[in-house]
Image (cartoon, rainbow, N blue to C red; front, side, top):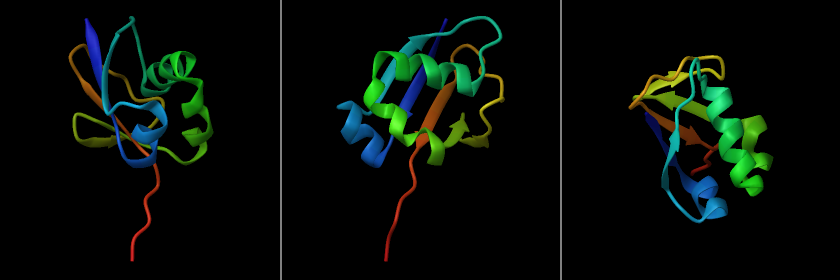
Length: 81
């Protein structure tokens, strides 16, 4: 069982990739998956305070459950004009 993680904008630039799959653990939450990703890629830690999350294209909170086969998007703040 895995979860697909999508990274956007400056987050993808810092990681060097836009998509990765991680093993899913029992009772995983958005925050737990995020923390495992940061354990592998510590450069992403600086984004945590301002991240938004979506699970299967629905906005989510860090305590939202993540099911096997889900897609978790990590979305940093964006600016525009």
